[in-house]
Length: 402
Image (cartoon, rainbow, N blue to C red):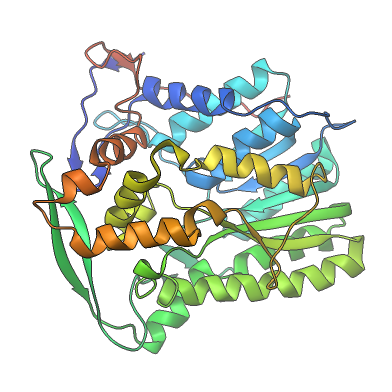
């Protein structure tokens, strides 16, 4: 088995390698952070998590296993190790999640491939039919740069742009020595094609296709619930996020939820919602101009009062399974972001944002936390891991056999 010392090397917020032991320890920490349910379900619900290896999708998978005892399927797209590179962090996180599930007596299968493809939908449907039975819950958490439409073969690429006019914002960057810099960047406005392609990738089309695929095969249980994970965020990031191309996709996702909710209620007495989560450091969010600065300032205001994704998704599972009532806003969205959008919190973050410069940023934002969180996405900066020791990189994908 190949072993080597793995050191963090990055281009901006993107790391070239991942640390298997660090990724495994992070998964274990997330699992241990989930409190036991006050009342365990009488039987293990069958669940499907699409986008199960990273960010909120990983949190949904671990919280579902540790809190609810789900059994079922996780779908993700990760790259294996090669002679030159480690596997992606999600590969190692999935292997660790599968091992914890096995040790705790939960039957969970992980499939690696294109969640947008009909071939993956067929594979999931067949696995449900042969092994798990009808589906009780589906959590949809896919953030991808492009999608190929199975019907037309057309490939769409998402764009991260404002709508209507160019957008100028402060953003946070680190040089090769890790020194922070606050600077301004300008993003040119989206074209109509940019908007349409982003909606095609990140809107509700694929979520709806998954539901159609499983419903047509009579694989949805009575009372089936589904949630697509979303984000609204602060007015400070509106121009590039909620009012931009991504926001157009999120609006489409929410409209899809309303359509699906009507259909599922008639079909199986079911429910479809979007779940609006709070801010977090993820591989997707760090790519958005201004988000890194905003999240660092938010942490500077809230400190440990920030609610991590694993705690948010534990709360979502309680609502999906009926342990707590499903609490939605006027637009039918579950809101897990109240702690972030509290008016006093936003006022404090805005005050810091307005005065943030390269010279002042270290006292306004919790940059040590932010920098560590970015590294932790790839298994680095994890307490208890000896990064000077060689570690095995050839970790196999979890066995799907019963």
